[in-house]
Length: 56
Image (cartoon, rainbow, N blue to C red; front, side, top):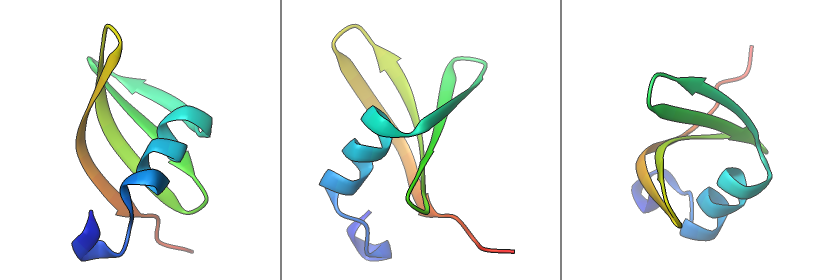
């Protein structure tokens, strides 16, 4: 995350406040130009990848 200039707090904001789409057992969320792919466990989120959305 930090290599791409995205802080941990920005990723957590995306998980909590962003719009979500479900793909199998993974969740993709978008918020303020950031996309986060993660898995949801009881009381825990496991972040798989974080990246910036590319504009059209």
